[in-house]
Length: 91
Image (cartoon, rainbow, N blue to C red; front, side):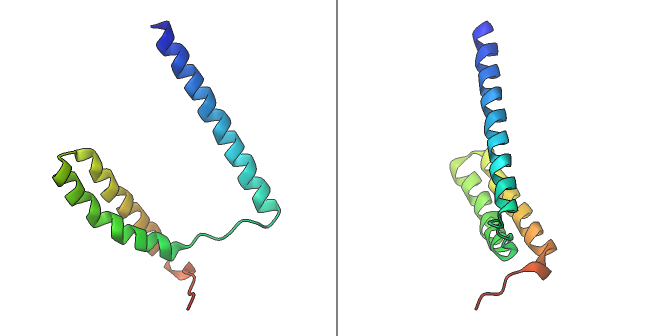
């Protein structure tokens, strides 16, 4: 029982340290002007691809956990549509 607690504690500390490192890198990048604006059109396109892909994957593998791919697609689709005015038009 103590081994499980120790492993959980170590994993939690590692996740916390990685999160802090990512936060510092992102904040530093924003200060230096290296931060790029989100491409909402790409999120919309990924949503269109992921939403219908999750259902047949779930049925074919008999794994209902793959319906999460459809959920992720729905989230990407809604984020892309909500920010449609910010789409970057590169032609």
